[in-house]
Length: 322
Image (cartoon, rainbow, N blue to C red):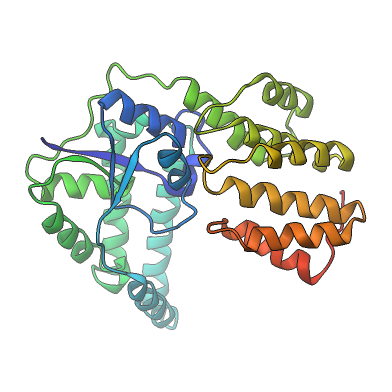
């Protein structure tokens, strides 16, 4: 069985309606894959850490080295270069390449579009520009060494490998028999659409049609990747944004009562942390504190929920509308 490389955007999966965690779930089902080999971000709150297990797709973590020390070396290098005019110019060149790459991956993007050879060439161009500006080594966080070690580890393996989008062009040249997925007949479906709806609702901005978004959330029944409890919690966020605390509380308590062990693992923490805040804002301090402690007692709660719960225990949450 060949090794198929699937691109990952990390937390940016929450940004794209047609290239999100639900889209990748559907792509794996389209390919007939039971799961992925994980060679992407070690972030425990990565959106696919929720979506893949919830969809009954396996995640096999490769025994990858911890490269945190490379980040420290990079910071030391940039601090050194900042002391000299030529060094600052090299940093500016690397910064321009990084900004160009960020623009590529934050512009509207589909999974098929990310796999287009022309798009991947543009991604690789910016990666090489950083390397040209800062040299391989600390300036690239030892990128060549990391990819060579990963390729050696993967040689002869089959299945689907999830790796950062910008690593894919280099992995293709290093892994004999590796390939990109054939997604010519693939179209994002309901799982992708639902995931996009929830992602959008969690990221409100001033131009949103809040009534339309609420109506869309209430119309849906949810699925394994984006269950009804999450849609209720996201709707509660809209009520909270306009100062409707009782409406937010009712939806969050409804979501909390619907929590089960087979839901995406981050959802209980997110629901309970927000519920604690709403209870606090309504003056129910004792119950709010119990809710915050429930968040901290969970086996897994995303860091944002743990931070909110810790802050709520230290000081009562107050709703501030602008």
